[in-house]
Length: 237
Image (tube, rainbow, N blue to C red):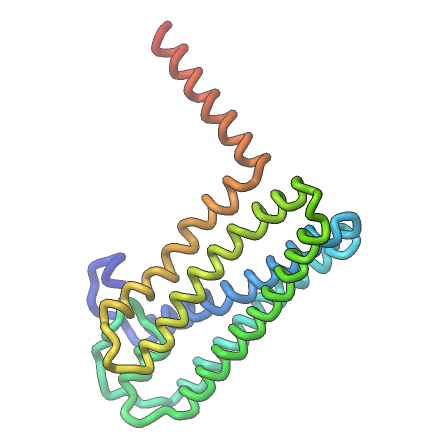
């Protein structure tokens, strides 16, 4: 809030809404990346049957399921906060989060803490297993067809960008979760990684996913060349 508007005050309802949005984003990043990993596994390992396996209906179901899981997990997390009395008014964080709000509680919140840890661990582990399964299968397919250089190159271009985003998010979120449980952790470290996982992945997504797509890259280069040529002709006429 302060970074965007310069305001240092925020209402309770707005703080809860901001925290809910941030946590939903964090959960959805994992579920969507897991869905993408499975889709890439089908595209690389089952190219001839891909359109039969990943029909529009299944694609829509996968997209809806990813968001429903994220919203359900975070919805229960914030439902547990209902009725929790707050005695503090200062949130020592760059944005509102569930943990920073619960630090203001007048009494311990063990149920919230236990559910938060179990939910974070279960969601991260489940998504990791899906991603690991998908990429192990992709790696096995590449090794099995080691003579097919085109397949290896396509698989690398398809998977490398996805893994970069996943690793950035996982490293940042793991450090944030651990640092919030230890009061001795550097506040600047918490702020840095909190900003990292919110800003970096969305900022680099268009570059990573766009420029590795040959058709899109060719179209952008063609558009750029056309604009340069038109400006050159206009300036010389």
